[in-house]
Image (cartoon, rainbow, N blue to C red; front, top):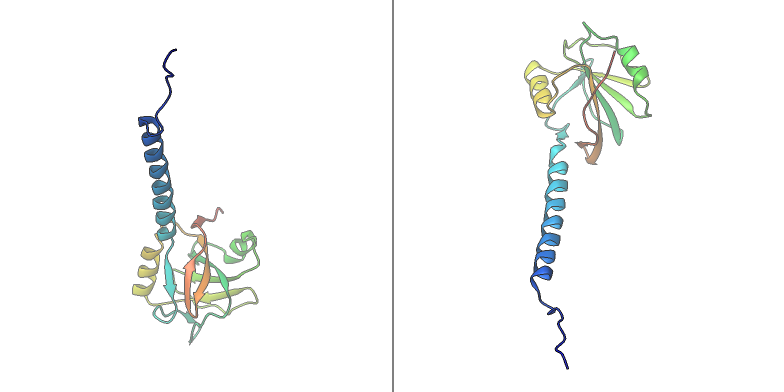
Amino acid sequence: MGLKKGRKFFSLNYLFASFFGALMIASAYAYFNYKFAEFKFIDFDKWIFYEKKDIFKPKEKKYVVILYSSHKDNLKNLVQKVKNRYKILAIDIYQKRFKNSKRVIYLTAGINQLLSFIQRFNIYIVPSLFIIKRVKKNRYKQDSMIETIKN
């Protein structure tokens, strides 16, 4: 009678498969952790923006933030390209103050505040937009990638 040649339960194949599986799970966790950290937060208690003369206090759960240049862009055309129902926070880099409309809240801030805002959200081209979502009271989290609006 011949000896049966079979695999041992704990062979190198099982060892490598287990290692590869653990590596895949760790990689997925690291990737999604990185993607979550990629989005930034803004606390309107610490970051002061103005509507005309008043300090802006957010009331909505979500906003679309548009950073634009009033010297270059027509905001009415940009607003028409936004295809969602959220109110728009329009931040002019030239700091002109306009009267709010039903859908658009015009914000301004000091130059240092604007530069910090642009740097925090890594905005390189205007007009750009992204969505923010309330996390807690006046603290909001970026809820979408930053998109450049094509004219």
